[in-house]
Every structure is written in structure tokens, then in C-alpha cells.
Length: 374
Ligand SMILES: Nc1ncnc2c1ncn2[C@@H]1O[C@H](COP(=O)(O)OP(=O)(O)OP(=O)(O)O)[C@@H](O)[C@H]1O
Ligand SMILES: [Mg+2]
Image (cartoon, rainbow, N blue to C red; front, side):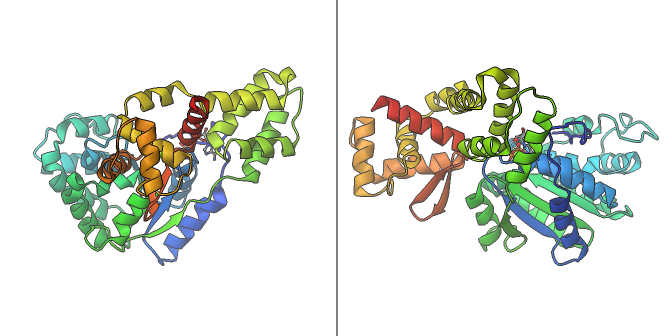
């Protein structure tokens, strides 16, 4: 995925310069060279990383590289190497390509931004060469005067078993460059990220401190409501905004949909805009699709988790599942479903026997569906 170079163009973006500054200060102090951030889905991680952190890093004299591994989960190694290559000058890119024995004519000499290099490299680079390409790119980065900030969004993909070799190579490459390459790992699955950094067998064991990403709160609501009031005929009070934000589970994406709905139908009032927003975000067509694609055991387990029922594996949980599925269910059915749901990032394990649905909107949709059916 390409980095948004257009930060500042979106008036609705609530900028968080202090937060960006805090992360960069910590790197400057050399207290750490890597951090891991997690927050649930749609809470604003990607927007912060792309629109606040990376531009701030660039302004402080960093080269910057961003990659979203979920979007390229089939070839995360290629995506990561391409992102690193994007930070290089055209000469650097040419050097990497020729070290790999690839034609270099596609990279225009003297081009400021290597046009289409990402596409070129992705096309040229097979996964079989990604380890070598990584080494070459890092060598070129060593020749740059500036330090580099590498942001790996949806980093949990690196924890998948099939990416283990590349993850080890990446860790080795970054290990010897802690002075000059700072890394932010971000993701929505806290469990997987934790496993990445806390398990001795994992390549990134003890490599980054893992911490919750600070969520947007009342300042964000205040900013958005003020901006909206500057355009709306019927103004809203901050309190009304705060109420809507909380009803929408403090999810910035949904709050912006509420604001949009209110703007378009001001005469209907804030409560009407809120119920409309809830009805659309919590009953998305998307959820229907997601739901129908799952097998009944997964659906049953998700329902139990959404309803906050005690342990899926407990006798009570299993008999509830039996009831939901209309056939006898044993522990291994439940365990298999849980494993699949975690693998697909639908569910996170918080503690033994304690699970959570990653997407709060989906959880709410499931609760509504269950309520309607019983
Ligand atoms: N700082 C912000 N100012 C204004 N709106 C924001 C901000 N952060 C997030 N949003 C809104 O919330 C939406 C979701 O944010 P974003 O995609 O960054 O979440 P995320 O945490 O990366 O989610 P996911 O885990 O699904 O990738 C954005 O598209 C935007 O509408
Ligand atoms: Mg994101």
C-alpha cells in the first residue's frame, strides 16, 4: 500500500502531533529502537501512523518506510522489501536491482521519486529471492546519511509460521542496525503481537516493548464537532457528540459517519442520526457476508463470545453450543472453531478461556442478530 503523501488535505483528520512527538523523542533518546502498538479495529492506528507519525519523522530528518502486511499477506516479504526500497534514492534502487541480477532500465535516472519502482520491484522479486533482496536493500540503507523509520502495520502477519524464515532474516538485519533503523510494529491482534515478542521461540522475542495505542477521546470529538458546527446550520453541543461517540463504542470511523449523517439530515436531529448510524454500522451487509462464509461451529462460538457467556469450553458453554447448532458438540469442535477464528483474526485470546471478538461492530451485529432470533 502506498503512503498517503497528502496528509494535511483532509480537514476531518484530527492531528496528534504530541503523540507522534512522544514516539520520536523516545527513539531520539535511544532508550528503545522498536515499539509495538496495538488497538482494536477501526480505532485510528493506520491513520495516525500514516498521517501523523511518518510525516513528523520525515520532518525530523528520517527516511520513512511503511507497509501494511495484512493487505499483502500472501507475500509479506516482498511487500516489506518494496517498502524499504521506496525509501531509497533511484541510485540505491538501481544498486539493489543489479545486485539481484535484474534489469534496471525501468528506473529513470535522476528521478526524484523512483516512479513505479514499487511495482517494478514487486514484479521482479519473487519470494524465493526475498532474503537476498532484504540484505541488499539494507546495505543500501546503510549508505544513507539519514536514519530510517520503518512502520510495519498489521505486523502480526510476520508471526504466521510460513513467514518464519523471512521474519528471522528481518530480525537479524534489523538487530545490527538498531542505531539507524527504528521500527514501529502495529496491529489489532494483541494476542498475536504478544506472542511475537514474548515467546522465546519467536524471531522477535524481547525485541520491542508492546503497549496499547492511545485511543481517540473527547478532544477528537470536540475537534470534529467544532468543525462540523462551522458548516452546519443546526449546531450540536459537545455533550451530544460525546454521547454519540460513546454509543458508537468510541469508534472514530463510526463517529464520522454519524457526523456525516447529521450534516445531511440536520432537521431530523442528532438522535435520529445516531440511530441511523447504529443501524447501518452494526448491521452491515459486509457482516452478513462474513457470517454466511463461516461454518456453523464458528458461528456458534462467535455467538457465545459476543454474548459474553462464560467459557466456551465449560459444560454450560458446550451445552449452549449444542443448543445453537442443533447437534451434540464436544470440546474439540469448540477448540477447532476457536483456532480458526484466531487464525482469521476474528477473535483474540485475552487469557486462558477468555476470548474477544476483534471487531466490536461485528460483535454488536452478532448480539443484535442473536436477540432477534431468540
Ligand atoms: N485522527 C483521526 N482523525 C479523524 N478521523 C480518524 C482519525 N483516526 C481514525 N479516524 C477515522 O477512523 C477510521 C479508521 O481508522 P484506521 O483505519 O486508522 O483504524 P485502524 O486502527 O488502523 O483499523 P484496522 O485495525 O481495521 O486497520 C478512519 O478511516 C477515519 O475515518
Ligand atoms: Mg489499520
